[in-house]
Image (cartoon, rainbow, N blue to C red; front, side):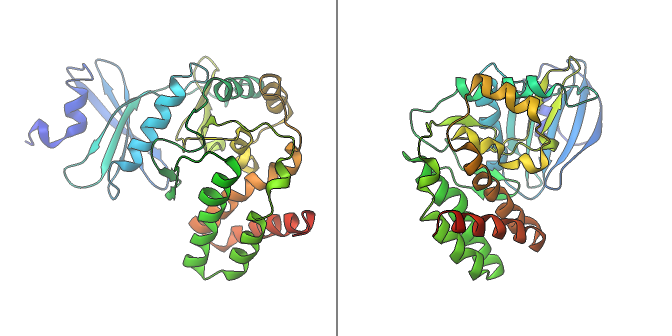
Length: 297
């Protein structure tokens, strides 16, 4: 029988987790990157994610993001408890287990609570985050930067364009993307830019509701950024009119919102291109070419 110290997950649950008995574990899926399990104990259930290949840095970034969102006391997120390394290699994160309801919940409540989070959490350090983290499995650079346009150009669009150039030798999308980056500032004329805490990867798979029907968001890629960047995954998030109406009642729509919308989609289309291949290239390129035409760049 393995010693308790050989299993840091069980060790934490049976000590700091205040359980005296683990009744059982079962797989509850996960994504294409991590495995996920539910641990049932006499102190209640725990949610555990593991990754057999990556060190604890990825989960540490996730835990910091979850804690930051949790502390806004706005929208519900699972509270992280422990991040660590596995003795066989890889890493784990233990967090609060939230029982999900049968639907994603009310769109207007989701919009209002997300806006409340953006309004509540602002950074006095500028744009970025305390650590670099990941968007999917792609590194996300969060170096503190005073200017939003500089941050988004360099650490979001620029990083993804360089990755596409290295990974695919795609000089066309790189060169046109760089031209766009040099000319995006007029798109922000009249907009009030503040560093708001963002979930960072808000698509339908990361949105749910609890058994009371209140919205829950999870698996973040947090950083402090322009609030509109939160809608960058809206092409697979299912946000409707009720969501946006409720959101803008708390965080008013800024001048030029519609003109900037595709600029924030572009980051995620480029990331999907880099993660999953050429099926996403045309969407990214069409956005770039549209803006080059619009800006006469």
